[in-house]
Length: 133
Image 1 (tube, rainbow, N blue to C red):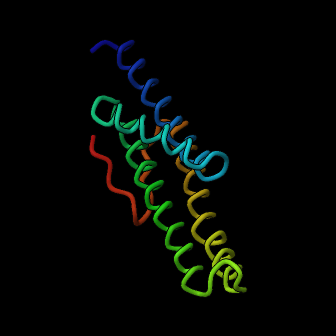
Image 2: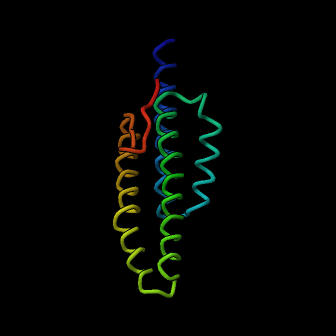
Image 3: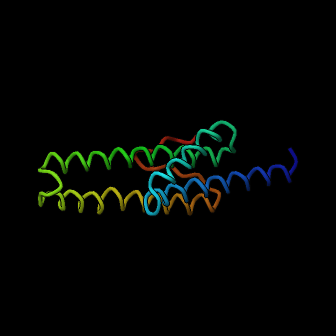
C-alpha cells in the first residue's frame, strides 16, 4: 500500500472509532435506545471490514452498552424485589446504581472517546476483550 492509502484508512478508522465512542456516551447520557440502535447498526455493518482501530472501539462500545443495559435491568429487578417503586429502598438502589455503575460507564466512555480521537486502542477494564489486529 502507498502512504496516502494508509493515511486514509487510518483516518477512516479514527473517525469510526470516535463515532462509536460518541454513540456509547450518547446512549448513556442523551438518547438511550436510539443511539444503541445506531451503534448496533454500525457494529454489524463494520465489524469485519473496518480498520483494526475502529473494530476495537466498535467491539468495546457494543459489548459495554449491552452490559450496561443488563446492569440497568438488574437494578430494576432489585427495586422490584425490595418492595417496588413506591418503597424507600428504590432511592437506595437508584443512588447506588447511578453513583457506581452509570458514572463508571460514563467515565470509561470519556476515556475511550479520548483514546479514539488520539487514534489509540481502548479496552474496557474487566469486561473488555483484547483487540485483535
